[in-house]
Length: 266
Image (tube, rainbow, N blue to C red):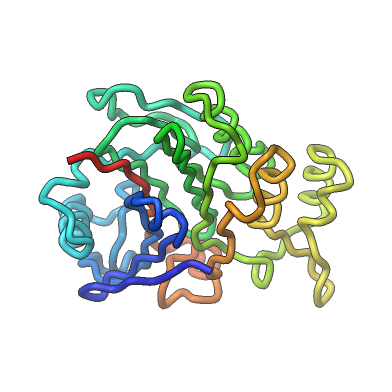
């Protein structure tokens, strides 16, 4: 289960194993910022109508709330998340332009990798041996594209990471308690993953429900990640809209919470 810390109403959910390894990271709640409805209040999505100065102020409030040095999040790297399976490597701090992708890996220090979500699942990766990190955006499309495994594979190719050493943590996402889907989605997952896809779905109250957490966890384990190295017990965004943004529960009129991971070097 993720742990929680709170300062000035800014809530950070975090992984005990990543924290133990000294990795700065967090899955943020929606509280403690300055954005107005429907983006209230710690919104980090600059694609909507929330003024950029609000997002800048939210970033400063977060920096102070996490007791980071001034400007620590100035190099925050986020992507144009396109609900696909592309993974990029961030090689140079000067290359912080927006990419169309749903996962990023790096060995750069002091560059936070960010994922923006409002029901989709953020996944953070850390290789404690090679000191490398990754972050992925896993909605149903990204999960179908095997985005978590592709991120793991990219870390293996580029950094020599071994799956059994990699630590992963799942952030808040819409859980199977709320995520009802159609039979067509079950057919797509079966086509991609065979009969194992049945484990990702349940049928309750005559509604088919998808558990993207279980799907990503199962895929990572099948590809060598140790089950005990996957922290996957995260809250449901749709159940807890006072704490998290939920695209489905709020009919699309909402903001995006930030999840991030960063290698710190003084």
